[in-house]
Image (cartoon, rainbow, N blue to C red; front, side):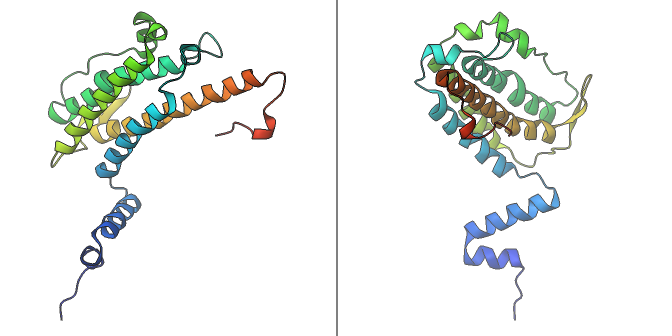
Length: 203
């Protein structure tokens, strides 16, 4: 009699179930799941344009206060970060962990590059092009040591896996920010009526 492990048995029965079972097991064991991270990055590249493409320039550039970012500024930030931050820093940490990361200053970039004067659809297309390049590169990786790190002067040891995890989380952090702008505009557009009946913004 041949005994099969649970994972081997699931693979024989249904490979898709086996893959999901392995992903759940990895999460419980604290093992980074690059495949799920890639799926998340790809999913965001579909959700973002569905959320912001085609909105008016007035909506894109609206801010609740001068020190807050507009939707357009958030999308500009995402496009620049894709090139200058996450992909570059993951690559450097994997391939040359002793090489200093080129500096970035996102708040100043929003001013210097005049984010709020740019064309939303053009910036969105730039982000999508760069995200596609990122996905192609990530899928090409093999046998990566995600524990390799760069000793950042502010953050301390930054493992490649830590930067990778932050890359995925960064998408959803800024989608929440974009959603907050739409919520705030709903409050403005509804005046003199309030939006409390919708529920509180507590997330």
